[in-house]
Amino acid sequence: QAESNDRPNKPASGLCTQVGIDVVTEAFKYEGGILKASGSWTAPGGPAKGVLLEYRLDSDRYQAETQAGTSGKWTYSESYKDCGYHVLEVVAFPSVVEDGRTIYCLTLGKTVKSFFQAPCQGMTSKLDCSGWTCKDGYCNGTCTGNASGGEWGYVALFGIDDANYTALPSSQKGPWSHAVTCTPGQRISFKARDRLGAGGFSPTVEQPCGT
Image: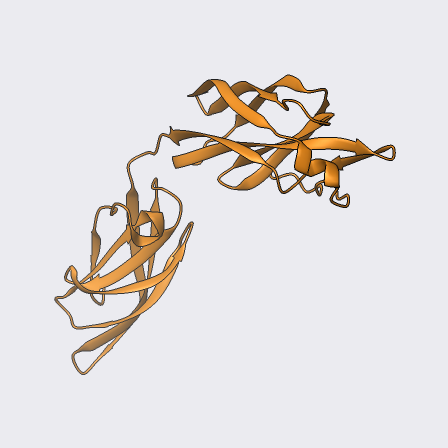
């Protein structure tokens, strides 16, 4: 999970205008749900005394560390299995020492990015309708759909005879319940679309109206 500690918060220093920072990735591998990366950083010239390194996955800050000196190596590893496309960002902030205090130059960060994809299983979908009451040629019931195996964020879609779909708000996981009015002989349809409604569809599953 993302680290909860705040960054060191020190006042800005005029010395920060005199330092630079560079960070590079030299090795990167994602395999079997394990992310491993390594690289180096340099703070060439000026009064730099070290670096604050932040490791971010999809913009969430997972780890941070400080190192002293004007150059060094970094390594990072993480178990990460959320399916889909992701990005590891390593952000380096130079530090200076002023009046015996270490000050981190948080406006001078340099970022290096590495992209990777965690494998996704094929999407599946399920549908269960119950609580039917039928009168005057119409039936009312509640249908519950579920989907899995796609990339983060699903939009759930309920329809009649694979048409006229109603989209429910996006969510990472179901199940989703939907009140349905139909006529005997029709079929209730359910499918879901991943990536917040911009990705692939799960298979369409159906159940007869009123039974």
